[in-house]
Length: 56
Image 1 (cartoon, rainbow, N blue to C red):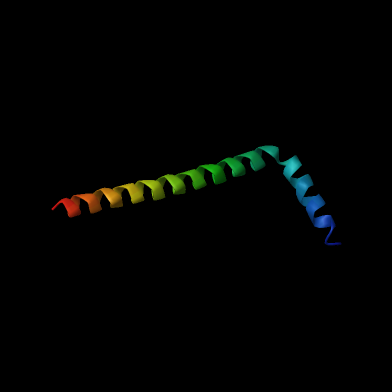
Image 2: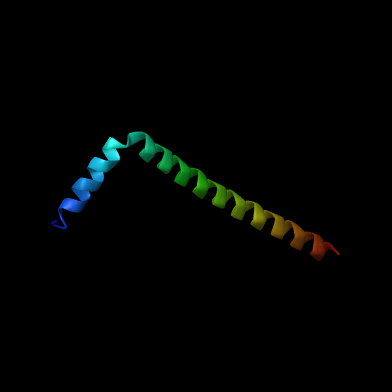
């Protein structure tokens, strides 16, 4: 098998399994959004605790 045939075979597989492809993409998007949200909440909580400690 030629290396140049690999992307063509991969694209055909993605087209044949459209629902699986969409669900996988959706899972990745939700996962990335969850990580970004958790990091943001963690940083916000950290800064809030630092402010409270500095007030004391």
